Amino acid sequence: MMLREERERIVEFGKRLITSALTTGSGGNLSILDGARQLVAITPSGVPYPEIVAGDVVLVDLQGRAVEGKPRPSSELPLHLALYERYPQIRAVVHTHSVYATTLACLGWEIPPAHYLVGCAGRKVPVAPYATFGSPELAANLVRAIDGYQAALLANHGLVSIGASLEKAFHVAEEIEFVARVYLQAKMVGEPAILSAAEMDRVLEKFTGYGQPSAKSPS
Ligand SMILES: [Zn+2]
Image (cartoon, rainbow, N blue to C red):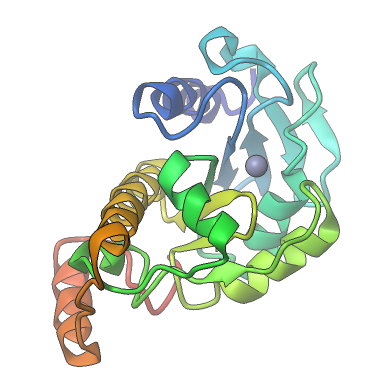
């Protein structure tokens, strides 16, 4: 089996999407790019995460042609491929329908730095304009919106995070879901204080020092 290790990582983190409450059922999707082979391992379409085995994880080339794997790839394949094409340093894409990030996405609100952990994604979490799920328009909107960030909301849809590894992209998705929840709750009772640009400079510098990918370059 080609890319066995990457496919097993997809299976493992697919289960974690459920246990970390980042999605339900078969919502959301994950991919890893093997930079040397230029192949993408991506979750299959419509298979519940607890049931996915390594052989179900679909391998495609960067043009989206199937290389190995029986089921159909995730319907968001164009979005994953567009990110790898535009940002060749990244090695993983995580897409979730996590409840709080998705709530803000339905409001069309970007997430400002009310909590410093927004710095996992950059100075804020931007929102990509709405387009139908799985469409090339959605992929194009996201690629533009996420420029300079590690995550972006998809209006009326969910969240996408990127990273130098699946672990890093998944970590960003978890932290942004926390930040989205805190921001929404704060907005329900008052007006959250927003951190200054100078403070976010310090936060981003410390995150870089802690081994987090720089918010300035999606790597
Ligand atoms: Zn989705």
